[in-house]
Amino acid sequence: LLGESLLKKVIGKPCEGKLQARFDEGMLETERKFCASVLLYNKCNASDGLWPRLILWRLKMKTIKEKTSNNIVGIAGEYYVCAELCKRGYLSLMTHKNNPLFDVVVTNADGSKMVAIQVKTMSIRNKQGWKLGKDISIKQNNENLFVVLVNLFEEGLPEFFIYEYDILSEIININYKKYLETPKKDGTKKKDIDFRWHDFKSFTDEDKKRKNNWESIGKKLI
Image 1 (spheres, one colour):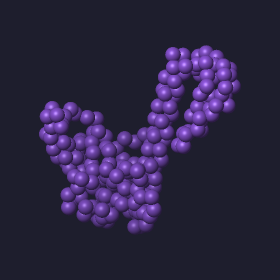
Image 2 (tube, rainbow, N blue to C red):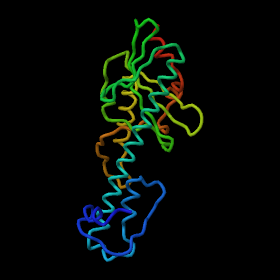
Image 3 (cartoon, rainbow, N blue to C red):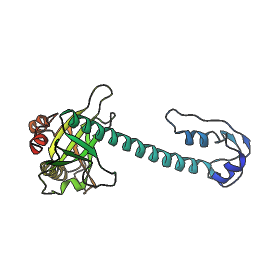
Image 4 (cartoon, helix red, strand yellow):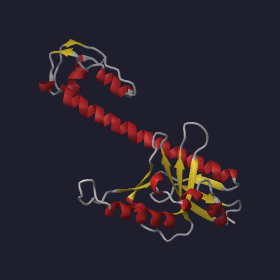
């Protein structure tokens, strides 16, 4: 349990009474420690500001947890992509994380050919598709730039969908235009949003043919 002095510092005032731990599955350890000091039988009530502060704390910790989880998922996808390419005899290296356009650089055995790959990974819980930044809608006019969409599973190897960057960009733009042209249920017009979905319900036969098909990248490395 947190001491009264630390609890006073967090809440802004001393709280007297019985301390009782409140442990929820999935809580972060830091969140557990805080909730352990929440007074279920306490002279502090909602008007004292304890519960609003607790809610804000939980929201903050939830955001940190989700961000950390997303980062781990992204890194896992990049390692899987590198492993698949190395298995095919190419040298693949992950870039620094502050590179906005691509995550993996791939060369042939003698280093005479090179391609760059942006990797986007779905979490295991995500069954809809890939949530992409709206920058994907801007073509790069670089025939050596690819996107690999990774679909993780609880067991076994993931699925990979391999696209030339500008081809995926065109697909995203077409699907997003259809999204905007479809009115909401109440008949009003949809607003522009800051992300783009590439989900399974919009997949065509051409999208499905890209599953685990590394040929387009291999041709650039010959």
